[in-house]
Length: 228
Ligand SMILES: Nc1ncnc2c1ncn2[C@@H]1O[C@H](COP(=O)(O)OP(=O)(O)O)[C@@H](O)[C@H]1O
Ligand SMILES: [Mg+2]
Image 1 (tube, rainbow, N blue to C red):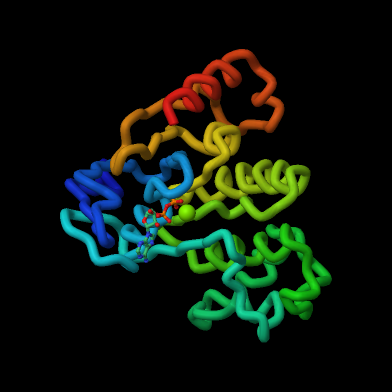
Image 2: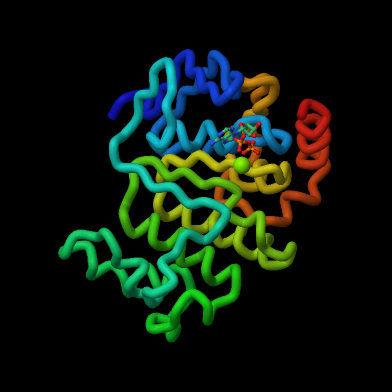
């Protein structure tokens, strides 16, 4: 177990012009880091770089076993819930599918297809599939952005609980500052091509969504919003 589970050093990504420039990030094992930033600042590009999807310059060190969940549910439409979750798992891991389905609260929907599920249910399947794989690094790219606000809050609470059980090292990209604070141990602000600000989240776990009404939460939220 190394102190640095993830280490990014001097990362550069260019499309026609530079999108990320000289980006650094260290993460400890089991840490949950949230990344916020305005639209187009390169949040998805950063996550995709860690996933190995991008041509990059610089160093990226991290575990090999990674899973990414994007904002579009990324389920196979022709596969049922249980087939989606079992996909890519080795035989001995398929026994866990039933447990995952209970964990994502979709018992009775095992044989349903994605089109028969609500957006929140589909996104739970996508996250369940990622967790079933037992990644050492979980990458979440605006996983709740397309959900209505009530469902989003329910999902945030749910994810907090799931993460408490699994303690998977997780990087969450979101434009929702509340979400970043609710879920993260740290919040990083991506701006002008790199991380410009870092905030420690001063709440113990387990956390409940009610912390969002505390003055200290509101202060932190205000400070982060100002720095975007
Ligand atoms: N495949 C691509 N080709 C060219 N430009 C891209 C590509 N993907 C993203 N970009 C550009 O890179 C910048 C960062 O995009 P992105 O990482 O998607 O931002 P965010 O996720 O923060 O909204 C944007 O200016 C976007 O237009
Ligand atoms: Mg994005």
